Length: 321
Image 1 (cartoon, helix red, strand yellow):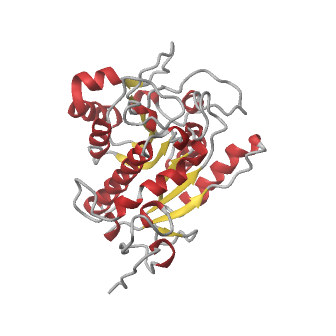
Image 2 (tube, rainbow, N blue to C red):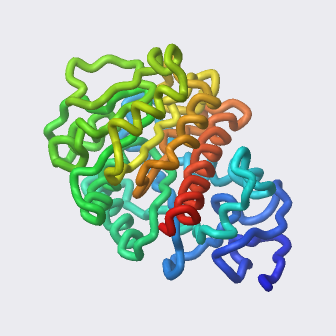
């Protein structure tokens, strides 16, 4: 029988499974109170932060996103997540690996540092759930995932921006050109990738399938899930969720807010409906706490990340993986 731990389960829990009894307002703030460790043996999912915001084109501050999302996640570890009705950690071994370290004062070293951070985790066969940080971090994460799972991958991309603006500089840090580079590098297949919630213009969407915000508002969640399933099929898919996919009413704490976006309810319903997709990795990015109101942006990001863990738990139980 697993020993019941009262308080600070992130550093005191003896097993990667199960939960502890915590005061939501106290204790060590790992993501959903998971064990803080760099030991990867036995882990199904590794949560880590990448506190980068050197690639932003407007408001900075996303470097504080991982800490804010961890803090917002504490209430989600108190009860079984809704609407799932189960404790994902009874069956899914999840750790908090801490944050990727990089030298922010030596920008040319940042990309390889994130790639190597991801490689070290993926060698263990655990899945990665990464908390940003600005959206540039997805590019080096895709490099490592494509090495692991084979390229090209499918991409499921929630965002206000397509992030396929042309940029042929190999050394640039830009959170608006990562997927231009990823397509050019053959990391993702645009024909089998989908961008959800888009509401900014680009003359060249590089062949990506676009379910823009207006389309979601008109056609709804069920139609969106049908289109995503048709586009992605059974291919290995990486999911990236830029929190500015949500309307600023639901996520003001972000660097490049755009009016007319998805509601929290719409976005969560779509994420929760992706159980048939082979999700090989995911990230939630662009939470910028300095612009947040009552932590609602960090809370939305924590809920999205929690639902991704619940999806993986469901897949592990149903499919044995």
